[in-house]
Length: 142
Image (tube, rainbow, N blue to C red):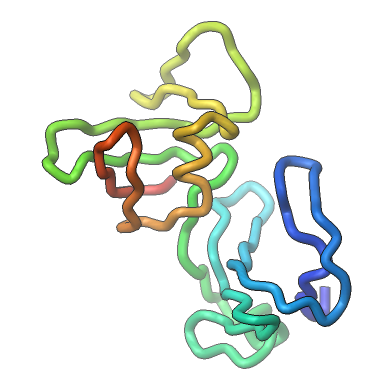
């Protein structure tokens, strides 16, 4: 890939919305390294691409060793807690529906398209979200 063009907007796994060229898109740019944790490398604001960490082009970012900012995505291991510290959860976002709760390294599986999964999607460490009238903060993403 030589440049990033927002021709398609990701909606869901295998589902995209066609935007077309010169679309005044607003949204984050996520890099998905093979076998690694996805991370945010920039953001589109009114059709203009702004890279994190003062990169001026996709080529400049690609040639760097920059890891960007980790985001919650499919298969992420997420640790989050309530603002008052009374509730702490460890979840792995998955796209497979399993009838029973499975624990892996203290993390329980949660469906990526569940209400909670959708609230955490693309959040970064330190970001907050509300679920069931309780405010939570993302503590760690693995």
